[in-house]
Image (cartoon, rainbow, N blue to C red; front, side, top):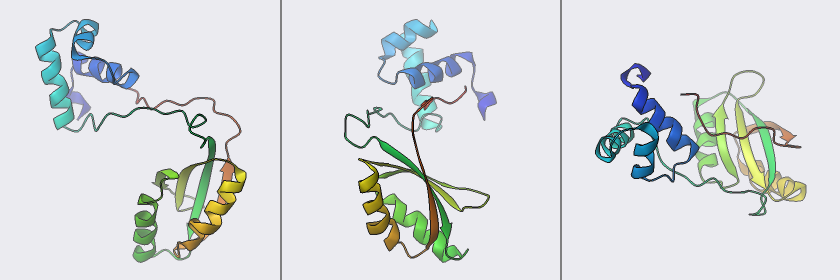
Amino acid sequence: MKQDLDDYDLLLLRELQRDGHQTIKELSQKVNLSVSPVFERIRKLEREGYIQGYVAVLDAEKLDCGFMVFCYIKMKQHTQENAVQLMSAVQDIPEIVECFNISGDYDFLLKIYVKNMKQYQEFVMRILGDIPAIGSLNSSFVLGEVKNSHALPV
């Protein structure tokens, strides 16, 4: 579907990824179009699903949840019921900010934010330990962040 986008659309997408807080007027100056066409193009990009929403990127350290963990999950048994149970359970757990169904040695990869190692240990016992579909897990603790970009290569 990317072939349906012209250079102006791609430039708008790049600009909105860089700073989604820009006004239509600011965007129109950057892409060298008047306000009305920019407004219509953005609405079209939203309607067609290229733009799925707008968010503020928060500082996890300042919010006291800067301990990031990648948790690899193996299901007890590969059944539809277990997969649905696990995918449903993670939706309601705020510490889990991303969940991917993956290939390889593990079935799912979770990105988790908590305050510290002690809180993660409690999280594993209290929250993940109560999900019957989980057979085992393996955790990797983030020592430092090298790159953090939400921007897609458009």
